[in-house]
Length: 265
Image 1 (tube, rainbow, N blue to C red):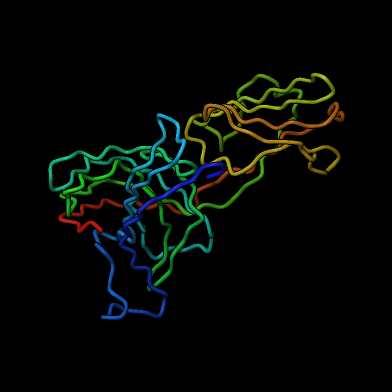
Image 2 (image 1 turned 90 degrees about the vertical axis):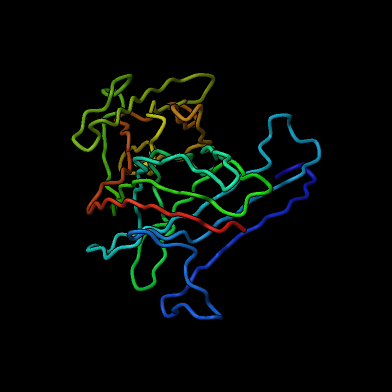
């Protein structure tokens, strides 16, 4: 965190095993297991920060969930959609709401995960961010939910930029996922934007192409989670293409998990 003096305490339970290890006194087993889902980490953070903004979020809890299975493909990315999550309650009765934190997406929603762990099985790890438990809490009563997990591959889609200006892109892989491109020139720069849904993890990357080469951008950005920006020097060459890399599911499985009486760090 730039320009800030910080002091914090982080409590965590972490049990990550290599593929060859099994549970033993030296390497304890997982924190909890439920129907193919493991809790692989719980971390509670309490921070005190000098000159922090009044609304700065300095306390929270993260829970890492590992979705394990025998997958047919060799893809190294997974798309996780949390379909349902019951209220998370600690043993003092406090309900822990989900919350966003920095670059960690707030669930429920969709997350494109490249964090993969393999032991006897393999699968993605996602991180849920919740309000911190009561300081007197020692356990979570319940952590119950349903998730859809897909192995995904990346596919390239290309569109004529001029023809697509201001229109929702039409493609079978984008059904239910509206993307609206736009661009304008001003003061010697070209500003290209994409209007996207708030949950747009399936859009891996995007840019502009001319004569078979990707154009070098000066900056990229995101506004309000629904507008993506690229800035280019000068005018765009004729015949520019909008290039999207999108995640396409190759195998999908549903996981229903129900953890009870989970020890807190």
